[in-house]
Image 1 (spheres, rainbow, N blue to C red):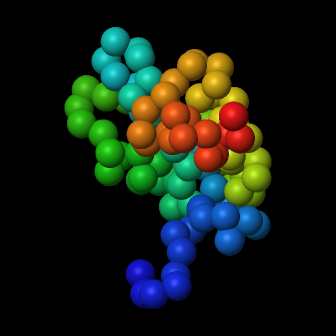
Image 2: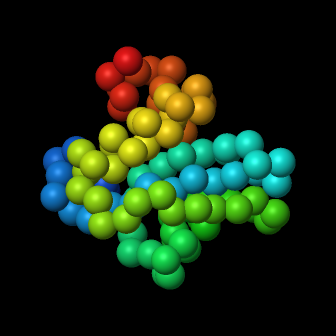
Image 3: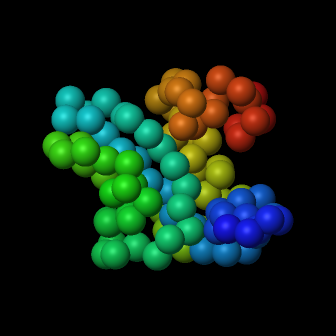
Length: 99
């Protein structure tokens, strides 16, 4: 990335297609919820999630072809519903979900 460039799901690219992914531990607890603009490899295979996983973790795609606002709404609903607060989801900072 050059100076001034932004990643694909950043706030200054609101109309790009995004998907929301969930990475789960083997005990079915949620490790991370995130947003990515990278195209899916298949219906439930996020390259971004795969980069952050270690076997035997699992990934699920929750919503795809979402604009930035829609993806944030899905991500925040999942974070709040599961009462998750960890650095990857930024819930403790309140900057993504306006809480």
